[in-house]
Length: 343
Image (cartoon, rainbow, N blue to C red; front, side):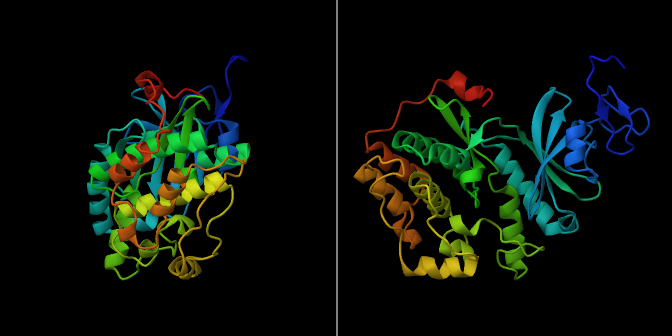
């Protein structure tokens, strides 16, 4: 192997070679760093659907794991999500997953990370392939800047609402919108927001476990969604709709602008009790010292109402209210939206 070549390692047998596949067992070779991060992960180096090579584990959650992979057909990086093995034997969940994934694959919006592919492995494992987004999250922006600026928050609101409108039009509800599920791409002056992870897995699991009498908890006892962002009716296991996603958007905006937590409850039961007592306090200034436009503050406050009937009924209605504020920037050029570029 030439000294100029990158040394790769087989995650199964440890052989070092220039790649791309191990000559011993056919596994896809990965970097040393990726192997050190998850040395016992059996999916590393696997090839899914004879197309996607798994090259790095990004993270593990209550319902599954997310990986970086290579689409060998188009030679581009993708994000791959796998559900936990215990869901493989649940026939109703598999059927719901396929229906939701088919709907999600039809969503076309520059503000939603597209679902590129999905499938069921021979052992029943459910997986999805999505566009790999390079950028930074809303949480990153808040931490770095000490809170969202008003103009940034207004543009973010517009773009996320357009994305949610497309998601809801496909018959989907995100269910877990939060600071970590919205990415900025481009640069700070000309960014485009992208909604990640829009509800396919969570919707399927929530539906199946609700019918099993487990409410919104998964088979591992994990709540389907993030309690701090969830509407009270969502926590109680009532059927969700667009106002629940808009409530989550309100929490993202309130916390991003104020640079502090809106709800501090440690578990979803105490959060439910807190939400039942009062609505969110209005925002008068940002954490950065900017005065809040009263109309924008009222828009956020309405999205946070405890009673879903008092919130905006859908993303289009909230977007129309936003446009009345008069600070909505012009849409970005299509070429920027199509090519996010590096962060």
